[in-house]
Length: 98
Image 1 (cartoon, helix red, strand yellow):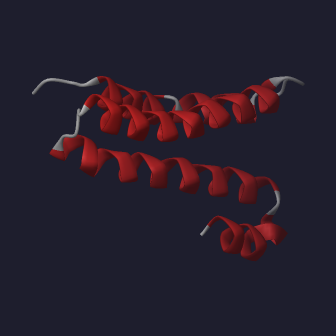
Image 2 (cartoon, rainbow, N blue to C red):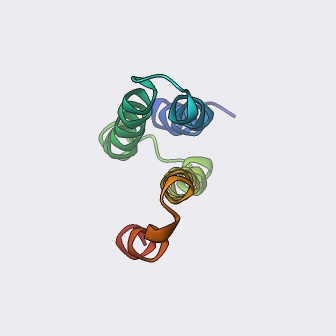
């Protein structure tokens, strides 16, 4: 199976998830800022991989399956991290994100 650029971006989005967790929990002043930037970059790759797949004609069944999985993983991970720090916000955050 050939990995296209859009699929590589989707795989990168999944690969960055553990880094978001690590930086989120680092006891350093810049840890959460870094986690937020990584989230933003991951979110932008969601737009970019879709754009490139359409623009370059690089649609694949694997990419079509993996992209929404990566999206859900990113959103659920973010929700879990935020709720772990602010349990009282579970209903509000769940409503906003979902």
